[in-house]
Amino acid sequence: MSKSEEKVSSGLPFSEKKRFHYDIYAILEAPQELYFGSEKEVNINIVEKVRVASEKGEYEKCYISPTKRRGVERRTLLWSDVNGGLLMDKLQCGIPATCCQDTCPICRTFGGMKAGEKTFIGRLTHSGGVAISPQVAIEKQRAMHPAMIYKEKTDTPMPYRKEYAQPGILYPVSNHCLSIDEDEFATVAYAFLMSLNRLGAGNPKGVSIAHTEWDGESQPLLVVDKYRVPMGEKPIISPSIIENSIAISAFLHLAKSIHGDNPTKFERKIGKDALHTLQDAALVFEEKNLKA
Ligand SMILES: [Zn+2]
Image 1: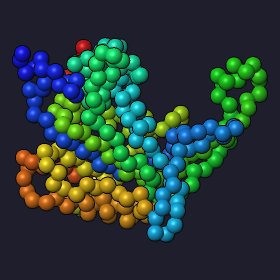
Image 2: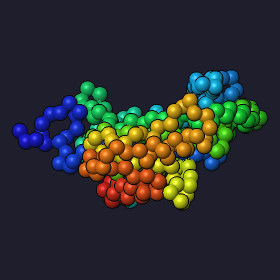
Image 3: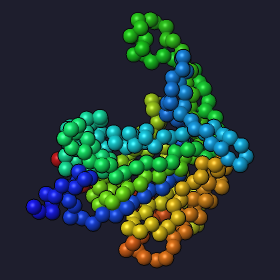
Image 4: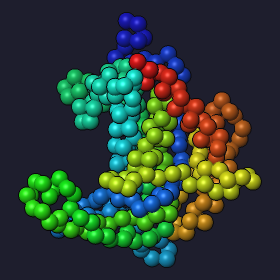
């Protein structure tokens, strides 16, 4: 039996390429209102929130849940264009019916399952998403969706109330990849960048990577790690921090703290270099997967 035919418990075929761990850390900013729903009460749609305890008391914070972000990333990949068609049609891969083909860049990375036949264990996980400032969501009145008016055969839109997370809120997030090769990281990078405009439910939606003055110029609050040994402190922001300026300086400080100098074991890109790393990887994804 050749190495490529060996059964492995991850379900994945043997890869000739060297695998690394990769992390993406970013602070995202909502340039407009954002709605990521949690539950519907009678005639009111509620934004998903979490409760956070800090030294100064307990706060309610808006939340971009990692599971929802993961769903948006996966859909963004499925809806990518391949010569006029969609990647999901080319692969016959969808949600929840994943294809689990060895050649599917999405299932290989995000995981997939064909019930009773095959399972790929996902090696990409999503974290963070708790807002920094504890601004409460604002409730607004909205008219009923036209489709509902048609369904209920009434001419009068039934107004309902909907909460929105306010613009300018910062959300620290991170994506973690366990033992993936360069091509698989290309999928992760493409999905991360492409999903930013699509985060949120309904309209409006979208976030951007927040910027700050960093090493003398305005740079994105972004860090990309590629490693075999975890040598740096992870720029993860404690949810108990409630001030943007404190969170941003913590992010910058942690991003610069790397122990030792061993680029073959740990490589960190920060700011615009990190963005270029993701963009270069996204180009690789397009070359490999979106050409007919
Ligand atoms: Zn698939």
